[in-house]
Length: 180
Ligand SMILES: Cc1cc2nc3c(=O)[nH]c(=O)nc-3n(C[C@H](O)[C@H](O)[C@H](O)COP(=O)(O)O)c2cc1C
Image (cartoon, rainbow, N blue to C red; front, side, top):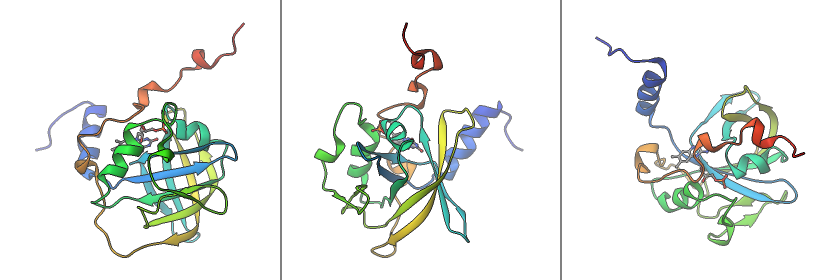
């Protein structure tokens, strides 16, 4: 018999069992580069091909990404714990992550990580904000590359990592209000 629990507790229990794969999403808005670990992500259309990622409103990557239309999505492998550590526990509000790893700019200036060759470059087709603490960015893959089959890095592989910006750190409307 199923255990009883409140909706949010039950949801947390169920979703933790999914143990989803982890990505690093990078972007460039013409002025600033950004990138962070993303667990909320999924393919969401076959024809045309679409892939959705969710960015936390607390993150530097979100603030850069809302002004960007090009992104790169890097699929992490079981060997990429160090990449997840760099991009998931540090915030671009405080450190330049790209000074701490190898990267190269694609044709649009978006950082590509040579350490993560399983990736695609994508164009933003929509941004959906339902008022929750993440926004959904829908991407049309433009160019896909892969070094072959790999075992994904999953949530259960990074239980030692603490997010650089917990989702509850997002600025409130009061904090965003103009002064004076
Ligand atoms: C396992 C794990 C999963 C995460 N999933 C997401 C996610 O789906 N979306 C997101 O925006 N941030 C997610 N984060 C949090 C960011 O990667 C983290 O707060 C990062 O430091 C933000 O960097 P930034 O402020 O430079 O964007 C996750 C972090 C970890 C460790």
